[in-house]
Amino acid sequence: MAGPDLAPHELRIIVAVEQARSFSGAAAALGLTQSAVSHSVRGTEQKIGAVLFDRGRGGAAPTPAGERAVAHARRVLRLLETLAAEARGAADGGGEVTGPLRVAAFRSAALHLLPAALAGLRARHPGVEPEVRVVRELGRGTAGEVADGRADLGIATLGTTSPVPRGLVGDVLVEEPYAFVHPAGHPDPRSLPLVDWAENCTSYTRDWWARQDWLPRATTRTEDDGAVLAMVSAGHAMAVMPALSLTGAPPSVTVTDLGPGRPTRSVGYVTTPELAATHVVRALIRELRAVAAEAAVSNSRKPEYL
Image 1 (cartoon, rainbow, N blue to C red):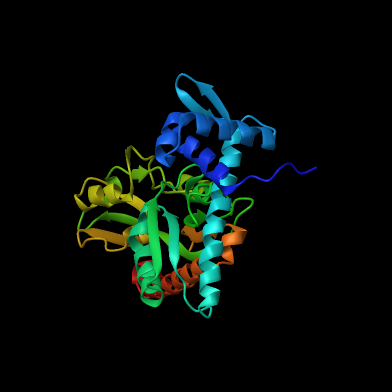
Image 2: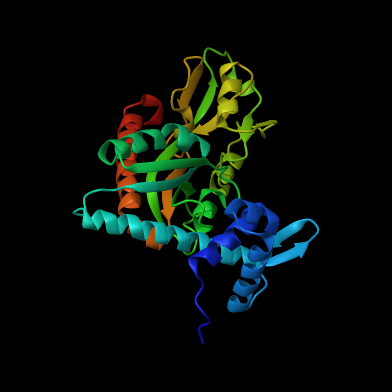
């Protein structure tokens, strides 16, 4: 039997408590009294039938039930915003795409794939207001941001070891090949230390690495692919990197093809089934597909990626 409906203001309150990790912080953010926030949360917990926050001297920490409830609350609140934007667009003839658009992307995608897509989107739909967050593609990564309601669309690495998470929808935009990267002009680049970073590979790619006798174990690790490229450029290391991370590589770096058995990385998008049908998300997906298609053609013309 269904319980009483939750009102939007109740959803906003539990989201604010989770963000602030305290009732007082949520009250300050929402312009309410602490007692009003506390009363609302208790009422929401009674309606749901589960404790959403552990109260203590350190504040209010979401329980597993609370984490799930807050994720759904964010998604419901976003859909309410989208409802208004979609309805206004329909009233104006259905052609105008407006409103906020929250995107989560890992670093190289945010630098080299997303800007052109957003430029095309804004040119065609100047009423769109993009908000981009760079998220490390570790653990739940960008897909987790979408699942938790913090992003409308995530640019993510997809594949057999990291498929589209349950409850989301998505597709591959581009298959980017890995290449051997080393200092230009170095007499023996394979003698250099191998540098790596945590986001670089899926287990599929690391299995490929393990089969390569000429590749040593990585002895140096950096925070991101930009630091890897800088170390290679300075002559301190060699690396194996995906094409997107090599966009705009300096002349001091040589990129060498790894052959027909080279590994690849699938870069795609994920979103929720509800938002996938909205005009603003569909418009961004179209732009991302166009940019990815251009990138694939450009890469196919480079000898190192044949």
